[in-house]
Image (cartoon, rainbow, N blue to C red; front, side):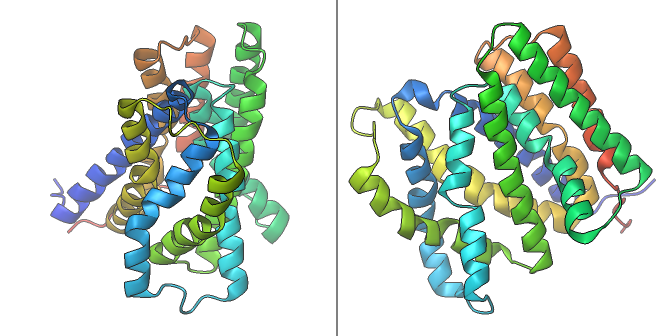
Length: 297
């Protein structure tokens, strides 16, 4: 019987914490429209509030050192307003479960396609099988949404896929360029805050002044700090402690947990076909992961 080290225990705890952080983010983002806040307000919170912590850290660590200007520009754009606004717009049309399946769920499939197109890296049979299951589950979910009255859900699904394309590009480039956590925070938060906040303040529609206090605080805390900063720290610790394979396998639970929370908290209807699609997606995600057990200590 292998005894897990404290580092492995906290690594698994961090990975499962990310599952609930991301799943609740799906719910919080879905109900944001009910608070009177616009998608532009949510984007401003994501960059502006996170910068309250990111700016002092960046000034201390100076993460721009070692990065070329082109790298800073590309990473900042990929994690910038176009990506975020696509995702927030998706929640205006599609339920939380769709956010999980078309963003988190499509990442392995997109990564495989990027590998084939850009690097001529052919996937193994297991990865192909998992990708097929993911694709089938996405098609089934989209078809079921249209059949049960969600005619505009496809718009949200498409926007989520665009968001997944942006995020997959970030994962690919950050690995290829060996981008560190502080460099991600600098590019994804500080640079975008400098560029976006003046545009939002001067020209974009806002419901910030009319938003009730409680929903405003919920969105401010969750959009501003939790996914950007807390999620990043947890991912880094989990990957370092239990390996990328184990971390990815646990994160496969995000679409299913997001769909379940959407049904329990928001009352979103999950038909039997949608539940089967989520199960199929989870199996597909687990199949695509190259799992590597952590070394016993």
